Image (tube, rainbow, N blue to C red; front, side, top):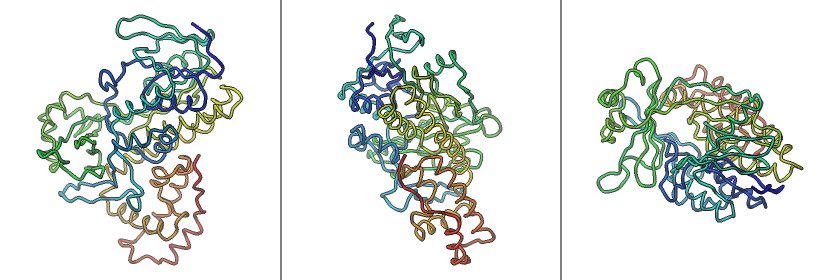
Length: 456
């Protein structure tokens, strides 16, 4: 083993964040080695996590642009204009995310995205080592030990600093926790999910509107569907872990079929393999991971899901991780050493991670229980009008999160103020026609300052 140079970084995990960060750092003059426990997906096919759909928004696209990956990724992406709500009575309603097609999000395939980012990282000069799962770290000696999953052999590598981009089950986080208290805690949502699929129509086309995220909200539970570029939809059923219905009461394919026939009737004929997929696809857990500490001096730092895994209901897990990568690369450029960079990175990103974690939890309640509620729809209508009447002053929280790079913490705090204002202005009204608009405009001006659109 040779000693690493001062401008050398070792990244654990060659998933989305690890591959992107490798490119950003190489472009800044760093030597980068990336270690990945799985094999090369370009050789053996994608064998990652269960979720194959991701929602790409402006924060993520900004990071992809910096890495020179945006054009390649967007060739595989499917535009989603808004939420297509499927009501229990069979009606549908498209609730736009933004003002027009300039404010949309994009459905991307996790496996395809990973392959693109790996190719770009290696082309930039990063060295990626597959079949190398982290099995131990000697922080004093600066030696990491990796295990080859094919034959169990062990391999050692010296490091200057380690970056953990190895997901919610992070091996580096485990090694760091054995060394120092990280304040780690995991809060289960009490709900889980099962993935199903809507195949293409017989003529190869999409079976339902492709440019939308479809939601079947049913109060305590819901079903969603996101489009894929091969004209399928990935369907995700979210249920509580206990109660009726729940994953405790719906155990077989036949029971799942009966649930869909009762509560998701228009989706049922779209999912021909429902019973098979329900019985054979794993049940995914939903939880939020909190850490009070993300780094060990200059020896190691965590980012993305390894530092702040969140529930998927704001579509920001990947976007937040990509924003982490940009922030960390910038701090490594500016700081005199890795310890200072890691500390500054944590100070900037931890409050923002907490904010988007909270917003993701809130969005689950909104998606499953409010998108078909009359009061919610009235407030959404008022919100759209206020955004038109007061541009730059009233900015919907979803827009701040998905179409801008306003810090998450700012979006969260401002969103709370705006939500209270919407409740105040619509109280006692069943229609916008009865509002006193001079009063409405005055309250907006009194309550909200102009938003600084500068990104982090």
